[in-house]
Image (cartoon, rainbow, N blue to C red):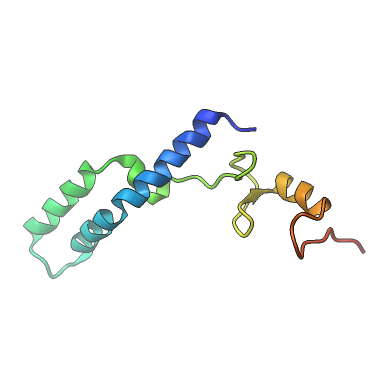
Amino acid sequence: MAKKSAVEKNKRRRELAAKYGEKRAALRAIVKDRTRDPGERFEAMLALAELPRNSAPVRIRNRCTLSGRPRGYYRRFGLSRIALRELASEGKIPGVVKASW
């Protein structure tokens, strides 16, 4: 099990990214638009820098929903490789079977 503090920090990052997502996207669009006035683009850049760092989607870490493990994460299932293997062996994930040849 991962540290509770790390899991909670990641949860807060997800909430902040959702909260500031629209505002961040609008500011980024202004910054990237080369037809706009350079002063306006600079103001948008400063406003973007004022937003909380943890509101950036890049800072979100994919973690296993069961154990909180950050490595060996399968996006399709939202689980780490270890949790996926255990659940698949128990037959709790429909359509997933252990390979044998």
